[in-house]
Length: 438
Image 1 (cartoon, helix red, strand yellow):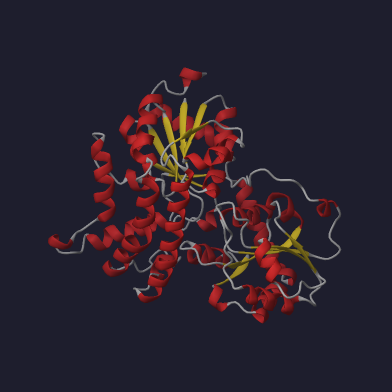
Image 2: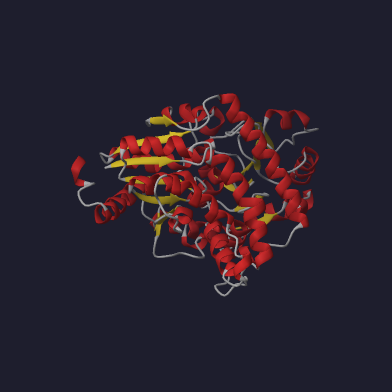
C-alpha cells in the first residue's frame, strides 16, 4: 500500500514518526513523508523519501517559526490572566469538564492560532500531492490537521500519531460538551469552521475525524493513556534522535550513579531553557556534594554563562539520549518527546521541569505511577531539586515503579507489529489496497 506521512512541521515531530515510517517501508510498503522544504534534509537523512509542501523559501519558514515562538510566549502570559484549565489535567474518570469560558480560551488562545499558522500554508500543496499519488493510508502527526483533510479528499484511511499524552482529544470533548449547553445563538465552533472551510474546497464534509483521526496511534504506556478509546492503537516509543555519535566518555562505566540533566538539544532552532541560567547555577551548587556523575547537556551559550561547573558534573554540548539514558540512574529534563519517551523505555526515574501545554497531564501521569517528580519552572530552586534527586537515586520504590513502566512499554506492540494492524484496518476499509503491493 502507499502511505503518506505528514508530521507537524517541527523537526522533533518528524523524528517522532521516523521509526513507524521505517517499519512500513521495510514491510514492503511505499512511504513518502510530506514536509516543509526546510525539513526535507531531516527526512532524507533518515533514509526516507520526502516531498516538499508549504512555504517555498526557508526565510518564510523561519519567519513563521519566529511568529510561533512569539505567540507561544504571548499565550503563556495570557494563560496566567485567563480562566484556569486545571480540570483538563485531572486523572479521575469522573473529572470535572472545562466550562465554556475555559474551553473557548483553550481553543481560541492556545490551539487554533498555532494550528492555522502551521497547516494553512501546506494544505493546498498536500492535497495536490495526495491526489497525484493516491495514498491508501495517511499518518498525520498530532496538530498536523492538513493530513486529515488530504486523506479525506482522496478517500484514504488516516490515523493521528501522538507524540505525548492525548490532551487534544480531551480538549475537543470538553469543548463539545460545553458547546452543547450554550444557547443556539452562541454555539460558535472555530475549529469546525476552520476545517470545514478547508475540507469544503475539496468536496469533503466536516466530521470529528478531521480533528482526531479515524484512529489514534499512542506511543506511551497505559499509565499515560487515561482516556483510551476503541480507536486507540498502542505502539512502543522507539527513539530516533537523528544522526548521532557515541561520545568516548560513554565507553567506561560511571564511577558514581549517573544523572543526565538536559533541556533539549535545539533540533528546532535555538534552545530555550525553561529556567534562567542563574537558577541552573543554583541547582548545581546545591547538588555539588552528592555522590553522582552529573552529565550536564546544555546549549553552548548557557554553559558559557555558568559561574562554575562542580567537580561531580561533566558539561557536554549534547548527549545521544538513546545511548546515554541506559547508563543513568536518574534524569532531569523538560519533558520533551525524546527525553520523556527514552526515560520511560529505559526505566529511568525522572524529574520533569517544563512549561509546555501538555506538561501538567504528563506530569500527573508520571507522579501517579510513582516513577518520578515534577516541578514548574516557578517552583524550581536548588534545595528542591537536590531533595528530588536524592529520592530518585535512593528510593527503591521509585526505581521499581520506573522499571514497571519500562515493562509496560516493552509489552506494547512494536512499530513492526503495528504495521500488521494498520494493514488490516486499511484492507477492511479499502479492499485490495494492501495485497496489491505484496
